[in-house]
Length: 210
Image (cartoon, rainbow, N blue to C red; front, side, top):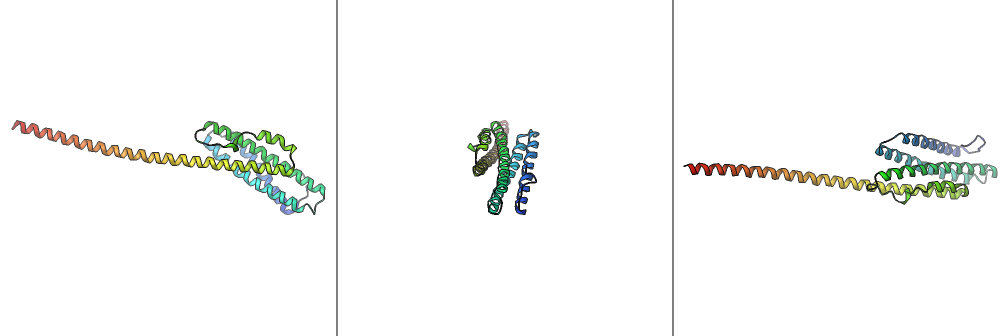
């Protein structure tokens, strides 16, 4: 976490504070997720956490732009400290992206036929985190943003599959309802025919006795 030695303009301080708040919210959110056993509630919680990750990614981009804009006015040492802090925040974000992939992989295993998890959920995050120390700041930013973009795309694919599944279920229910109503009408018709046959049989017997 950033120490008091960091020199930032008011705009940068505000963005930095928002990033730190979001990262804390992610930490609390994943702690809460550990206690949730229901897969549907887990999915909902993961969707909320993904929204926070998107917001964190956007804020880190803004923080990076502020560093670049202030670079000409700041001493090299200050710029290095700010870039180090940015790299630290990107690593933290990437660690939560990796954690999210692990949860999504677990959920995907439970409902393989329902969700198309896509390549964006393949558990490669440990490798990404391990290599982060060897990457430049810009490469870290690009890697983090690419991972989040892939996650976003995979979520959208999953949502589409869910919506399609719901639509198929609704159509099936409507078809079954129609078939049930048709069968009920058929039973009514059969009852009427049976009643008519009984009446005809009774009339025949009465005529036979005359």
